[in-house]
Image (tube, rainbow, N blue to C red; front, top):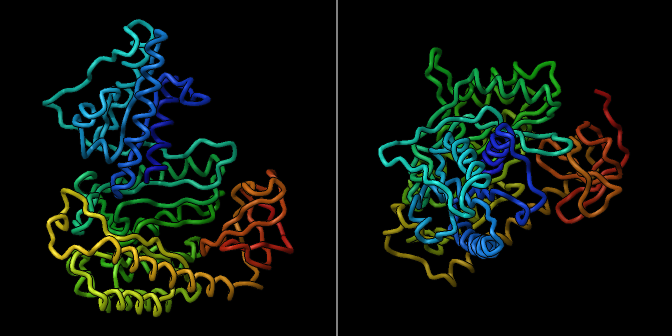
Length: 445
């Protein structure tokens, strides 16, 4: 979501006549789009701001300056407090206030041309309550764009007890389906080959403007909209297990354009901890959903999120998580231990787990996942797969990187002219968690 929204802000700047600077030292405006999901992300931001504050001081000594803008979830959470903490910050633009970005750009431009270096006018209107609006396009800049994100909803109504997202993103807002389809049409005209529908809780999408459309209905519309276009693959992120309907499974199974990979965050394997997290499903319900998904799509690969060390977690709770991992066997998992987030319900929970124990438990989860990933990938060697060629390999300029619909990465000999093409090849060997492909057959589109 951060990538998609950053791309939308970059597009908005270009539409106002701005161009990307070669680096921050040459910039008239530095925009940092922030995330608040993890506390570590916020910690890193303060280090980044200290760097730009020093650069701004140096430039002002030379009689010139630049504007420093902080956007995104952290900006939404801290608001004007961030400017008080870091006076070098000129504008704070939360997730609800992105529509103000053109006003910021205009104010910066006028000040740099006619004003006092480093003194940018305030645009604050205390009585004005910003209203979130979706951008028209979220296509990131690049010489050969292949994939793009398409946000379909914003916000979250779930209030998982550990999560800050509902407080910084607000309540769920579903995007007008006509605007979603229009963005997809524009992406097809630019030759995009794969799109990912985005939302904090993507499968709770519900559009009630005119015809009432649920997520499965939107998937049907999207599958129909890409027929006969360059777009051949559809993905979506992130799915909440409690909202995954039988109709969604049916639509995915019936349309081959939906990639046979799904990210399905489980977070934990203990019913007691799931309830404390307010996840609103049980271990049994999650496993039943996995069973139904794999019955409908036997070739489906699954990835997940796992959170250990939640307040009150015992060794037995951890064993239940490990047992669930053994049963499902995820191809990969984003694993992390609990960090208290002020403002969430879990922040005040008793029974906090010691840091040393959290790290030990996390290392066990990571070690088991490493075994599962290696085993699953090894079984895939020898398979012939279709890949979308995305970019030149960063490790070898004579190789390109492709992705299977199961979200597996494959590297093989190639050049830039192949980017954006589909190809069939054999998964011949593994280099870490990346396959090496042979016997390439490039598709003619």
